[in-house]
Amino acid sequence: MKSIVLFGAGNVATHLFRAISNTRNFRVVQVYNRTPANLVPFQTLVDTTSKMEEVKPADIYLIAVKDDAILPLVKELIFRQALVVHTAGAVSIDALENLDRKGIFYPLQTFSKTKKVDFKNIPICLEATNPQDLELLEELAGSISEKIFRINSEQRRSLHVAAVFVSNFVNYLYSEGEAICKENNIPFEILHPLILETAVKATGMSPLAAQTGPAKRNDTQVIQSHLELLTGDQQTIYSLITQSIQNLHGKEL
Amino acid sequence: MKSIVLFGAGNVATHLFRAISNTRNFRVVQVYNRTPANLVPFQTLVDTTSKMEEVKPADIYLIAVKDDAILPLVKELIFRQALVVHTAGAVSIDALENLDRKGIFYPLQTFSKTKKVDFKNIPICLEATNPQDLELLEELAGSISEKIFRINSEQRRSLHVAAVFVSNFVNYLYSEGEAICKENNIPFEILHPLILETAVKATGMSPLAAQTGPAKRNDTQVIQSHLELLTGDQQTIYSLITQSIQNLHGKEL
Image 1 (cartoon, rainbow over the protein chains, first blue to last red):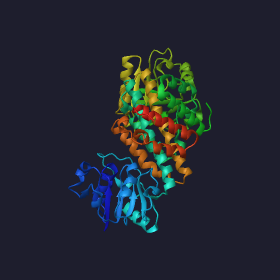
Image 2: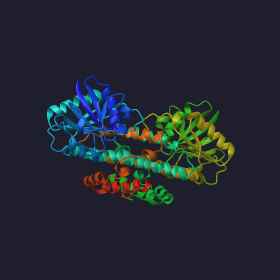
Image 3: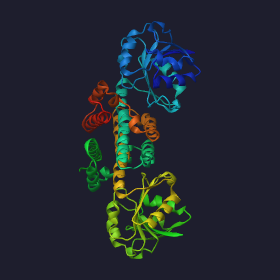
Image 4: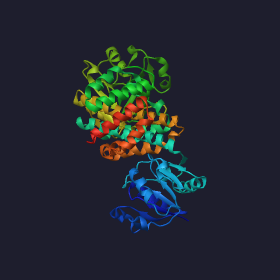
């Protein structure tokens, strides 16, 4: 049985806590968080602390705090023999400084506290400075998910950019679609099936091959008619993405 | 039993043909297409023709051809007593010219020929110049889908723009995400669960409220690090959407 101290009490930490609780070979022995109030949901389930000097020795220190809180936290760690692992997509392994044993355990999914997630299908990207630690992380990851990938810090930085494109930026386009509907008294739910089908399609074939629409068809009349309806950022985004689609597919306006 | 002549043999026409075949009260009596070769898949199922003078009288003429082929086709129609309906999101009802009985039957979904679709969940946007015809279209739409909406031509124009944002433009962002992965030897499938979850989330809550990511958090360090990795259109798009997210959420870079 390997012991884990979990640092953090936010969405990622909460979901990891639940997932690890269901494993045979790993156990969270303590949850640390700087703000005591955030530990309340964990108190009946596990030992908790807000004091770094009370942090227990363990096999793995799993850090699931905000990106810019990782480095200050690592500097304060007293028991430095554990494998120290963070869960951030955008932070290099170098942020774990001069620790002997360090690694990354990056679950690539969007988490909200209330919504249950099935960790089995969440890809986990792993990295470690020494081979035995990588094996230990693979054992931990493999006990909660079926999708394990070895991804180094340089790849992870690019992967994080790609994730911003396909998730944060995509959600921005959804919200502009919602805004256009609202302005015209159209229920946004009309677009729900299209949103879902577009996502499903992109996971079944290359999205490059799946591209359709006025930009791809170079339908200048429709493009012009759409631009006339738009103003501000919506118009700028429409122009630029239309142009980029045509660049990508080798056409010209 | 109401009779329908279907004009067109592409994706939308094919899916409509299948869906209408399963209704009790409507029957496609003929499929018209300018190019005889495209009629081959229909020939064993229904009467087909490529000659306008052979088009049968019917209760409804349902036009599912390319946007810019609608007007020329309508001009050629000989039997002008039918209710003439087109299926295009981007074409106004005025394109049906001086016909007495005209309407719109716009199924809002992305269709591919090979993939089966369940029409029950596809929203159908209806419009007609006279109330009886609107009722007839509601009967037809209601017999193949559970999601019927009355949407006038002005609303439909905006709806079509919104659909371009949440589908064509979203797919463009997927393809940039795919390109970034390829360049860095990362399997794009790592992003599949994130793509699906982001879409599902946006249909369960307002995407405006669901927005996350470096732009929303105003995490300038991560944004800067991402911009350094990107060039060309990817960099331009990253900057502009980041700025737009911050405008939308009332923050400044």
